[in-house]
Amino acid sequence: MFGGELQGMTKNLAESRNEAMARLINEARNRGGNAIIGMRFDTTELGDVWTEICAYGTAVQAVPVTDAARYTASQLGYGVAAQAQPQHRGEAGPT
Picture (cartoon, rainbow, N blue to C red):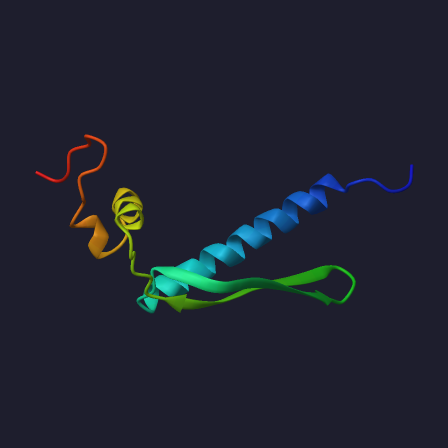
């Protein structure tokens, strides 16, 4: 049989991308960021059996600018917005 998906390879690549993203997120948090912009992957073949996957992006401090964005940020536990939850649709804020 020729062609088709190599499921083991697909699984390994997906896990590697997830690991690269997790490292990028941790590094952004360590640098005081709460968001990443311009995120991208770079993949390099190393010999016949190794593949390097790198995740790049810029750590930033994102600030919600609308009530809806502040509410979403508060629900997700992001930054200052998490401390000052606005009242929306009958939902209670912090007590």
